[in-house]
Length: 221
Ligand SMILES: Nc1ncnc2c1ncn2[C@@H]1O[C@H](COP(=O)(O)OP(=O)(O)OP(=O)(O)O)[C@@H](O)[C@H]1O
Ligand SMILES: [Mg+2]
Image (cartoon, rainbow, N blue to C red; front, top):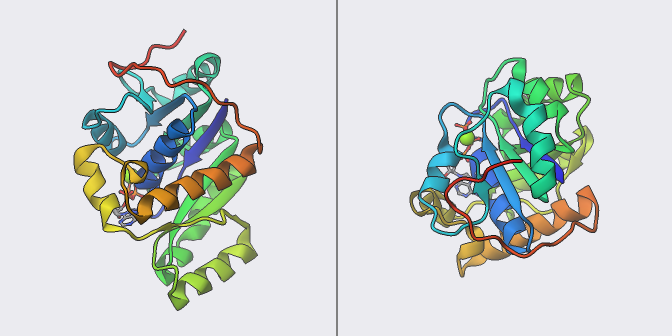
């Protein structure tokens, strides 16, 4: 199992939207995916509560950070991919979450303000000794600011080559528990391509399993 932690200390960077889209795209590709929502606001869970499809899965309730190592170990017996959403402006405990990850994905909007705020997130990833990847979100990929952001981030670390461009469907999806992968528009290709790039990055050969039909809340062990 691979574990991805979505974190950015900047609010609204796209952590939650990216979490459900990566999870849904990985599930669509045949992986068994578990999501944890460690943000007290529980936006990811509220998205999932509205979702009809059985994958990706969540637990009946989200664990405390202290329970995380055990949860990760148990999930490893059942799932191919674990995706953990985290809150902004969290203090040091996020370091412990990052420590259980294979990759920390840092969503960044293509904006000067977001780039300026990156230092706090990078400090946490460094303290966790976690491998991090930048994911540009909510961008118009034809804009100059997108190119400037890509250029700046490339200097700071590795950037996932597929961004999550701005699409209004992502804003609507929260209300219906759907994702880019469920759409017939451009978002579908965006999200597929994003998952493919992450998969290539984490191992190039992620395993594929048939989808399971469980929605009530996954049980571990
Ligand atoms: N690719 C996108 N296209 C259009 N809108 C987007 C996209 N990604 C995110 N959004 C919108 O931007 C806002 C912030 O996104 P999201 O909630 O995912 O960020 P977050 O980092 O999880 O926020 P928080 O820090 O509050 O947890 C939401 O209104 C969401 O609908
Ligand atoms: Mg969020």
